[in-house]
Image 1 (cartoon, rainbow, N blue to C red):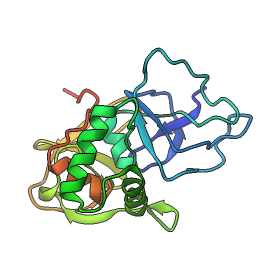
Image 2: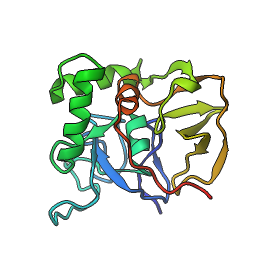
Image 3: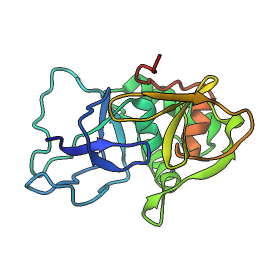
Image 4: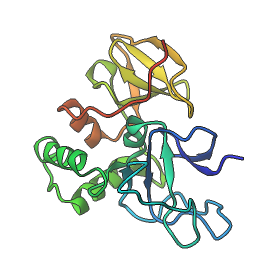
Length: 201
C-alpha cells in the first residue's frame, strides 16, 4: 500500500504509487503511526535530491521530518517548494540569484520562504492567480477542468503520479488559473529551467 507522502501540483499530500524524481519536506507532518496529521509544519518547503552523500533515512520515522515525493521538480515548484540549499546547492544559488533580479525582495532563505508562503497559501488553501496562458513559461502549472497541466512548448501535459500520460495543444489565447506561485513563475521565466519527468510521446 502506498504511503500518504506523494505531493500533487496542487500541494496536496496523497497516497499514490508513483515515487517521482525528487523528494522534499515541510517539517514533521505525520504521527507515530505514519498518518499525516497536518499539511505543513514550517514555512521552509524544500526540494531535495533522492540521494545525497550516501545518507540513508527510514521513511516517516517517528519524530523526524516527513519525506515527501514529487513526480518532478516542476511539480514541487508548483506545490510551493524551492531548492534545498544543502543537497541542491547549485540550483538553490541559481534560484536565489534570479530571485534578487525578478522578485525584488531580499534573497536570503527566510525572506524567500516567507514570500513563497504568501504566494502559495490563502486561508490555508492553495493560492492561485489568473494570467494569460501566453505569458507563462515552460515549467509552470495551470489548472483546467480540475486537472493540473504542465505548460511546455506548444502543448499542455496532464499530471499524474506516474508521469505525463495525456497531452493537448496549448491555446494561444486563454485566461487560466496558475498553480505555480507567482514569484516562482517569474524566476522560471527569467531562466530557471525545472527538471521534468519524460513527456508522453
